[in-house]
Image 1 (tube, rainbow, N blue to C red):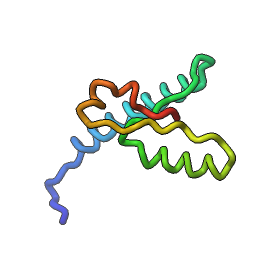
Image 2 (cartoon, helix red, strand yellow):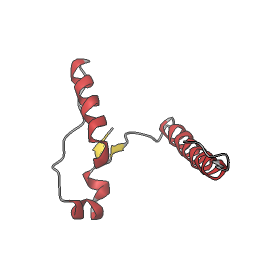
Image 3 (tube, rainbow, N blue to C red):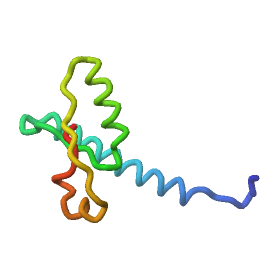
Length: 88
């Protein structure tokens, strides 16, 4: 349903702002990954499916899969987030 008085301008402007911020973050991450200092990145717990796919493909391509660390409770993850993540 479309109303003649509906103006999506505020939502469009907000989405544009968020998209531009996301693009800048992604560009910064890519630049950092290209640095000589970059070694590995880490998967956050919310990225488990991405890690599963990388392991699946890595095994089939003869590459070593990232190590699996034991899962801990959500409360523990908050205090130890940097030590419970998976290498990329």
